[in-house]
Image (tube, rainbow, N blue to C red):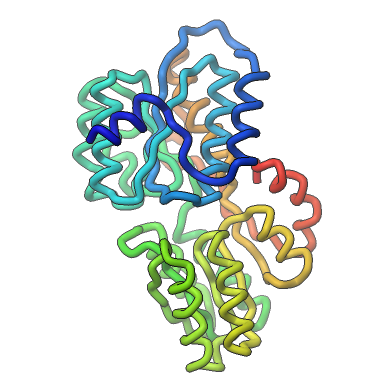
Length: 323
């Protein structure tokens, strides 16, 4: 709990590379508030693991909105649901003015979110947990509908003439990941197999994908559920001597490069920068003007299918850490 308090109260940044961290610091140093509202404190608590570049982008969006809105922004994360819940509890104890939280494992987060709501702290859920957000008392949810995103992948694979897809789930118990693969199965005319891997161990991920591709040459599409896993799947494909197309959820600079050179087929972008930015902005709007968006429905930031045709135009944004 001491570590949780440190992370939550100090607002320590803890994911990703030095470049993204330097960019965030530069933006905070140069930015000026565009409003004269009180300096409220908002805490964002996510289920991110260490080094996940996706959450660098979410955090970047949130921090830049915080500068504009004169917000003191605190960020913390833990990929273990019970620890993530403790971080929410720590934010409630600090009496922050607003909380942004992910619900990748909603059952474990329900009590902590309820405590925040009971304390009168407005909550916005982001990225995962759209089905539970309203039930838990959140103002709104910002992200993509994971079932719809999975369905979009199935439709794209159909257009590409694929017949057998491997859906790689890198975080067991994450409801959003299950929804993505389930949505894929709903619309894909071919066969879908789920492969569960330990996402925190990339060598094991590569070995697991490679073994499956070696044992089943009929797999002609591999779908990873996060940008960092796309490159690992490419390596597994090469080692296995497979001709399968590698496709992925989420976008970063490496994925954009892979799309451009044909190493990857397509990516599903849920615009993580927008998720972070809008979460802070909507909390500010609620505190300032009692505004709520969504009308009880999620505010969707995706999915958008990105192919080689769009990759070049987005490369600049991926390099600066906003796509």
